[in-house]
Length: 126
Image (cartoon, rainbow, N blue to C red; front, side, top):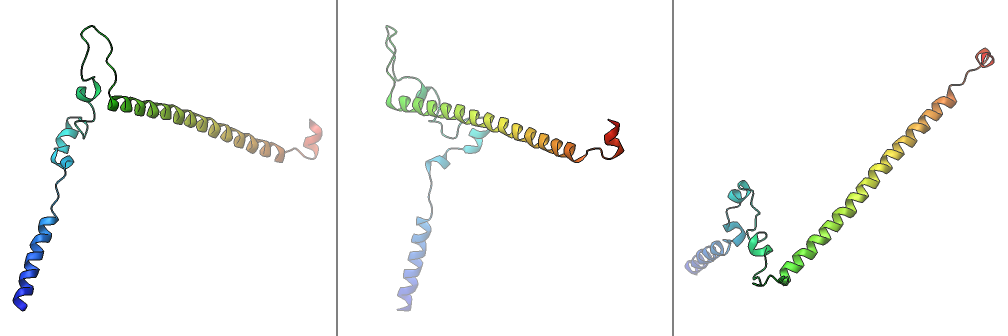
């Protein structure tokens, strides 16, 4: 019985070791080399194969957009509109912060002016 459990434990340990090894396709690409060359992580994400049409007409007619090309363009338009929206909000926040700073400073100056009033014979001099 003891021999059987040792064999089972030994065989289950080797199976576990074999199952723990996993290779993914993204790690098979040399990421350090691509980063050093200034290339995107995914070679299929950008380039002439993904951005240009699959075919062209010889008479010069425009080719229709592919499904993925149209989806990519719509996504880029959404991102661009979001950037414009957020930059407008950022500009508004900057102006508001400046306005609040100026009001706080003017309030501080008003308090200082109201506290320092001449009294006694100094009031009569004016």
